[in-house]
Image (cartoon, rainbow, N blue to C red; front, top):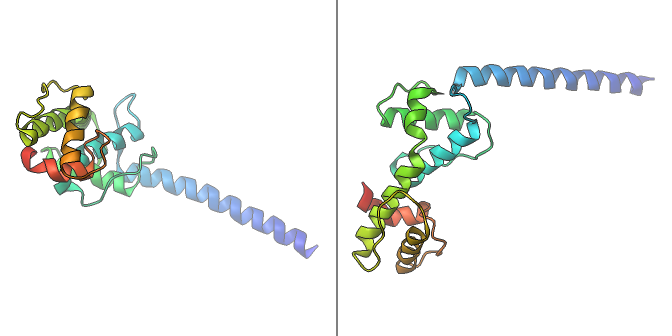
Length: 169
């Protein structure tokens, strides 16, 4: 009988802690910030922030985000840092003004990649700077990666940007 009551008591404690955790999480989410743009998910915001961090290594104070769709502390800190560097009020909310800039980060990344590759390769391979991360851009990125002994995947990730960043900044 004691085991039965102990089991019921344990189930009650676990249920209360799960309910308490979910309500704490939602209030934390509201305090920390959020995404206030219709149709934009937290995961999309995290992807765009990671793109921005890729070609802005000076702002990786908090590291890359895990794209998990959860608006946690690191997402909040990175949004505030993005807002500060973009001349916006660092409130942690992704509203229309923040999203208007953040949604174009992949395009900026592509243009920056193309321009930096053109400068690094100095005419050996020339790509049209059109904002499209196509086969020519991948070929140029692979050439830069080969030149510096990096894995040649054609993606201008963090290691490649350590080389290209002096042409961008």
